[in-house]
Image (cartoon, rainbow over all chains, first blue to last red; front, top):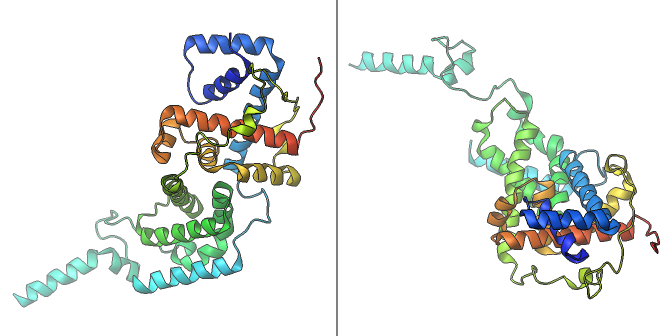
Length: 87
Length: 231
């Protein structure tokens, strides 16, 4: 019988690969009986969904994060130098 | 002989894409001899505008993966320079933004690769103490997970939540952060992550497990109010 600590590890691992049968069964049985580990599983799903959203839309989240004007200027200069060299 | 040579040059020049571009004549054979980026496209013609048009987007994209402003700025700069370098390869099947983003993606993965090599201390074994406090000696929950009742779709985009989420992500230690970001945000397979970070498969599972455990705990403390569970 797996304890909670072990099951949290397996829940995470099951997000990355198909667990061997005995581990999968052990995890499922534990999850049926343990509401805290079930919550843990739900929380990992929440993290995964949120991370997916993060990867899909970088644009609308946090408009305060933007390229500083100094960095923008520096990048433009480096591009101009590149174009001069290669034209 | 000289006349033949000049005729040759003229013919060659006539069929060359450069000539057609100059005089806007169609391809003499009715086929595209060289697939060049269309010059009519404004932005591809004016890379000077890229920084204003796509700079913020790319910066944000990079920042939310590396969490260090100077690194993100460098990655954006490298992306623009790499784009200028390979501007001829630009295919109009995708937008410039998509094209630039895909270059940036590769730059970010390179960054993680380099960073992983630089990390001398093996943080796969470190940073475990705090998480081990969550369980008692028998491996039972000591600090029990709360019921979150949260819909990612609804929370996502809420300013306060996003700030906390990014704060938690930025607090992830070294390779745990790399592994989590590569896996869940960049969508790489664990096999690919092992290659990028140069770690074993079981190490990648450990890193991801620790990262997830840390993040959920961080969100729980900072965002979700902890409900008492005494049943």
